[in-house]
Length: 315
Image (cartoon, rainbow, N blue to C red; front, side):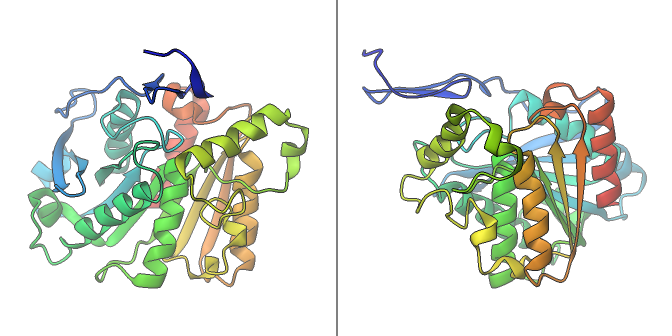
């Protein structure tokens, strides 16, 4: 066993020259459960065996019991982790989805996508798309999953993700715009601290140490070895001629003041407005906060404010 490193993307992942992969975070998982604090029930479902694709579903039990015929908004959530770490069952995502579902009174589907580097991009994009198509197959109330058939309102579908998950959410939103989604058109997309980039440094990026910029671009290249580079439209939406075709009515972009990716979120809202897209885009900035702070400190004032903003966007 060699301890020689091929890639060191601490604090996320290390890859050794002998091919070993060591994930340094996102390995703590929780089983699905009935959460006593929020009253939200969850379960894991298999979407397809080949490719291996699954999701974790969340249902607010009080609503489902008290108003069994009332349809609830449906959220498809895509977790972050630089395309290389975290899972739908990761403790931070499981706990956050419980809180979000309880607060918003929605049904949620948390996507379990294949991770790089074992499964290079576009695997994660394809998995998210496959999950969305599976969700849409329930719009006639005849799908394979009872919770979606009985409780989900397919006129009120939303997609959300953080970091790399926000990147995926944006890109599947474009695919919905160009290919359609079996009669389902999402009302809105929430991008929390989206992991976008570009060859040209913008805003505060110009003052970042080169090592930070190299890390952000290097991680993208690790996840997508065949990428055309930092201006790949999948990574730099401003370079995408199809941006105006985003398949939803409204977008909420959330950024954090101390996040190295902050200016990418602001830039995204600007290029989206100029793209010819007919929807409405709103940006919220959390002052004094860093990347995905709300997952690690969900009860702080700014995290509560961010959650409330997401709740009002969906409702």
